[in-house]
Structures are given as structure tokens and as C-alpha cells.
Amino acid sequence: MKTQYYTASSLDGFIADRDNSLEWLFQFGEGPTSDYPGFIKAVGAIAMGSTTYEWLLSHQIYPETGPQQPWPYDQPTWVFTTRVLREIPGADIRFVRGDVRTVHEQMVSAAGGRNVWIVGGGDLVGQFHDHGLLDEIIVTFASVTLGGGAPLLPRAIVSPPLRLVAAQPYGTGFVQLTYEVPSGRK
Ligand SMILES: NC(=O)c1ccc[n+]([C@@H]2O[C@H](COP(=O)([O-])OP(=O)(O)OC[C@H]3O[C@@H](n4cnc5c(N)ncnc54)[C@H](OP(=O)(O)O)[C@@H]3O)[C@@H](O)[C@H]2O)c1
Image 1 (cartoon, rainbow, N blue to C red):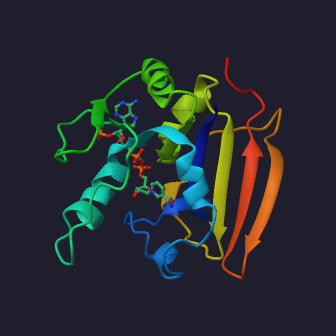
Image 2 (cartoon, rainbow, N blue to C red):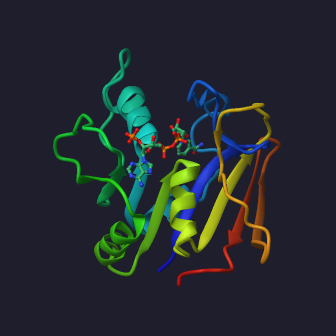
């Protein structure tokens, strides 16, 4: 069982642009890499911050234009927020706040031996890393730079450095890098 940060990023380290848009990513079409079905199958619990959740609400679940899509995850999902957010009937979503350690314990228990996925944003992933709870970072870097936006992982991880365990190019648009986080779980 691993706690993973799986995401897509611009080459200069942003997971959304300054307007919280992902158009830079979607210009390549959906599913830039072929590994997502295998990845998500091994995930037993999911966490995300409120900006990411609200992006899903406004772009996929309740879009202003276009068809509504169902909540994309079967796994129980913890959404971090200090506010009261719109709920999605039928989706297993738990709104939480504060210390990530207690939530991580609940996630590991619910995951039943499968992996825990921290969807983002970067600071929330950083909070898990601050407590030694992040095991792996899988980033698909798109061949674009954004110059600013939501940071990939606003933490200094210098010594020991991350350990690169895989590098997989996908055409001219993407390269996926997989890193082990050496501090691991404490
Ligand atoms: N490229 C990709 O594949 C990818 C993946 C994921 C996300 N994204 C995008 O990247 C952007 C990320 O946005 P973001 O950096 O603002 O991150 P975020 O983690 O989605 O949202 C940050 C918010 O989460 C809440 N939060 C975080 N930690 C908390 C804690 N311990 N307790 C209570 N609440 C907590 C706070 O919300 P409140 O103000 O509600 O308290 C905080 O303002 C979004 O636009 C998202 O759509 C892209």
C-alpha cells in the first residue's frame, strides 16, 4: 500500500494555470497517458483540496453548458475544506479539515490494502509529506510552460533527494516521471 501523488504538470511545475484552468492539458485530448486505468484500479481511497473539488463541480458534475457527468470515483473521497461545499448525491464524499494525519489513518483503513491517492493541490500533498506520509510522486509533464499558476509541490525536498524509478515518454506531448519519496512513512 502506497500513498501517491499522481498528477499532470506543465514543464515549469504548475498543475493549473493562473485561472485554475486545465485547457493547456486538455488541448492534447483526454487521457494523455495509457496508465490511468491500471493506476486507479489500485487506488482504495482519495483525497483532494476544495479548489480541485470545485473544479470538478463546475466543469464536470454541474457544468454551466454541456452534459453533466457523474462523480468519477467509486472510491471513498475525502475533500479538505474549511467551508460548506455543495454535495453530490450518491457520491461517497467526506468533508474534512485540519490535520492530515487523522484523515490519512481513516483513508488507509478504508483503502483495505489498496493505495491512497492525493489528487492535489500541491500544498495538500505537501501537508501529507510534512508528516512523512507521502511515498510516491507520479507526474506527467506536458510539453508546455505556464509561467505561473497552482504549484506542483510547494515544498523543498532536497536531501535526501527524490529517487527516480521510471521515465516514460508519450509521443511529443508528455513524459511521465515516477519518483519514490525516500523519507517514506514514519
Ligand atoms: N493537473 C492536474 O492533473 C490537476 C490535479 C489536481 C488538481 N488540479 C488543479 O490544480 C488546482 C489546485 O488548486 P489549489 O492549489 O488551490 O489546491 P487544492 O488543494 O485543490 O485547494 C486548496 C484548498 O483546500 C483546502 N484545504 C487544504 N488543506 C486543508 C486542510 N488541512 N484543512 C482544511 N482545508 C484545507 C482549503 O480550502 P477552503 O478555502 O475551502 O478552506 C484550500 O484553500 C485546481 O485548479 C485543480 O483543479 C490539477
